[in-house]
Amino acid sequence: MNDYDIAIVGGGLVGASLAVALANTPLRVILIEASVPPAMLPSWDERCIALNDATQRIFSDYGIWSALAADAEPITATHISEQGRFGTTRFSADEAGLPALGYNVPLRAIGTALMNTLGTLPNVRRLCPGRVTGIATDARRAQLTVEIDGATQVITAGLVAAADGAQSALRGLLGISAEVRDYAQHAIVSAVQLSRPHQGVAYERFTPDGPLALIPKPGNSASLVWTTPAAAVETRLAWSDAEYLAAAQSSFGGRLGRFTALGARRAYPLARVMSEQLTAPRTVLIGNAAQSLHPVAAQGFNLGLRDVAALAEALTGGADPGAAAVLDRYEAARQRDRSRVGNLTDTMVRTFSNRIPGLTQLRHLGLIAVDLLPPLRAAVLRQHLGHLGLPSRLRQTQLAPAVVEVEE
Ligand SMILES: Cc1cc2nc3c(=O)[nH]c(=O)nc-3n(C[C@H](O)[C@H](O)[C@H](O)COP(=O)(O)OP(=O)(O)OC[C@H]3O[C@@H](n4cnc5c(N)ncnc54)[C@H](O)[C@@H]3O)c2cc1C
Image (tube, rainbow, N blue to C red; front, side):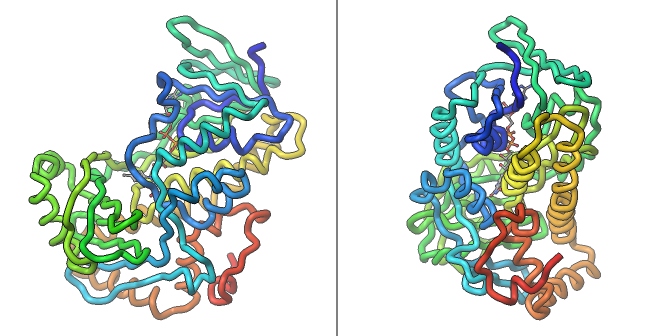
């Protein structure tokens, strides 16, 4: 009984979301995760991540949002600025005609909601720990070799969804290459206590070292994501809390009053990894296995969840989940969104982390243009909300006219 319609390799946020998306379908699904329980979702840590409006719609559709809402801090505006220059851009939920542009949610809450739902799904089997070490395909099935407690098992499936993260073993086993850009930066993430209320505003401030983001959390606190050159990471981690707070404050400025207390710091190395292909025979890549991005503008999981939504949609109605037509539908639905978001985040990082004088003027003009040109502003806002890659079924919106009028 080791044959399934779909085998999902990787039970992180994206793989687990796909399993939930396939609830209420006739598909027999297995979710295979390498790490040892109870850490079914090793991407869990004490981080919060910003979920945009599109993600909120997708999670609502999957019945997950109601379990997250109590832990979700609304982001009612975003404020974008550059250290050392006047001129800012601000987007608000009001101009989008929405209650919030997005929500800042603890990873642990998302993981718990996904796991609780998975536990109720009769068509999904969870295999954890199980590490996929081989894949072979023929005209009818994919065959996975899985190591479980030192023994080897073979699992077959009509379709394999590789959700095994940025270093995807499956991508390597299938011979799919990936374009890797090491940013030589880390994001140091921590919570910070503020002396002034954040009023739901998320801040993205570009500094010569890289972007610094403050994303609202409940109470008077925020997630502080401070991009740091690789050479300075150890030093910044070794600083006392007071030293760290003072340095972060001097980069961010005084908009939120004083930073008064700091949570634990954790550093994440940053690279962009773009898979050259999204599909191979009887296989699709989703989430970080397909593309792993710099966290600037908080796009990574939001984009991965749109992979999930597109795949779930491509799977409806067909008898063979791994048929070439399904793979083609998935690829066609995802190419544009992923390359647009991949390029956007990369351009933001490279343009703003640069002191070349001409570029300084250009990016300043860019911020002004976004502020002054309504069509450009609307396009940026739609991107921000995640609507450009949302399956059409979930696109009905109550967006303000300025935002709706710019169609692709
Ligand atoms: C500092 C930082 C801040 C971020 N902030 C945001 C944000 O605000 N908003 C946002 O949308 N995104 C954000 N992201 C991005 C987001 O965290 C990722 O896009 C997301 O977690 C990727 O999930 P995933 O499931 O694709 O991959 P992963 O979380 O890497 O999961 C892959 C899973 O596959 C398993 N696995 C690996 N190999 C095998 C194998 N051979 N067999 C079986 N299982 C295997 C692993 O154990 C793991 O559980 C941020 C990222 C960083 C680093």
